Amino acid sequence: MLTEPGREAAETELDERKKKILQAVIRNYLETGEPVGSRTISKYTDLNLSSATIRNEMADLEEMGYILQPHTSAGRIPSDKGYRLYVDTMMEEKEREVVEMKEMLVERQDKMETLLKQIVRVLAQNTRYATMISAPQTKRNKLKFIQLSKVEANQILAVIVIEGNVIKNSILSVKEELDDETLLKLNILLNSHLNGLSIDEISLGMISVMKQQAGIHGDIVGDVIDAVAEGIRNEEDLEIYTSGTNNIFRYPELADQEKASELINTFEEKQLLGELLQDAGSENGNTGIQVYIGAESQVQSMRDCSVVTATYELGGGMKGTIGIVGPKRMDYDRVVGTLRTIQTQLDELYRKDDR
Image 1 (cartoon, rainbow, N blue to C red):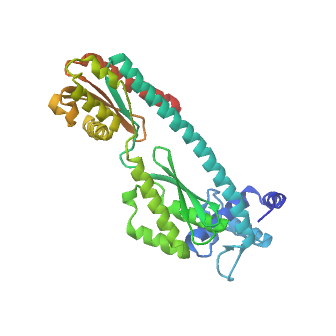
Image 2: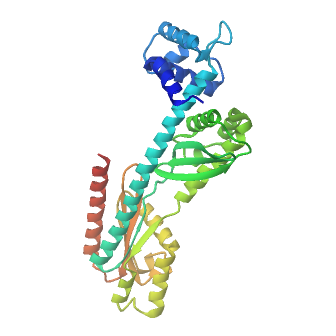
């Protein structure tokens, strides 16, 4: 591995144009396994240089020892020196990106959880009914980014970022220790094939091609895809926040011990609430409001109640549902007005947060 002074010296002798051309040669060779010519590089980079200029730059890179020409008439391939500079600088950059992304997303996720808990608590206080809210989700979670990094000799960490800026971490076991160059190749392979896809868009044929390109590390590709699928499936489980269940006892028609106990259990277990909010979200359509009176609710314990739900949207396909549960004689005007206000405030807050 290059020492810090050695890396600085290597980077100093390469101007920005040479660095970009070297990166393009290496990335293209990693993807195709074929020697890379100047015409390919002219299409591959954003330098807008002629093939002749690129040939001259590639000749300089060859003279410096960063690329090789295996045959007289062939294009170039990376040398060990070229790989080393690429691995050291690019992996450092990727690690920094992952750290920055994780810090940003964890902060945003914590802020969202705090906000939702505050909303459901304020709703319960203002309406004097039982309230619930589901965390935002996307209808079809798509993969945004994968980063593999070494944890121990026989373990790697797969950091999986899915749509909605949700991070999932998975520890994978490997048969033998992987060097930085191998991890880099696997990162490029996985991201070039999978970025932007939902789990049902990843076909068996695509997986087979990736495993073939990964060679002896094909099992790792399969393990990563399993981790992606698991991460997306787990994200599809609703996170629900509730408040104000004791408000049920304010209303005589709901305060019967058996009825109240059953209703409170429904709020505590949350599984039925999740089904109710998911169905309500699909029926509400585009940020609409839905009212279920008595037997119109699919939840048995709520057959003596009215349930009013509203869908909120945070952009990027991220949606959640708010629900208010009270007696059939609830103040519908006030409840619907309150929910519309919350929808507007969330929309304004999200737009302000994204500016």
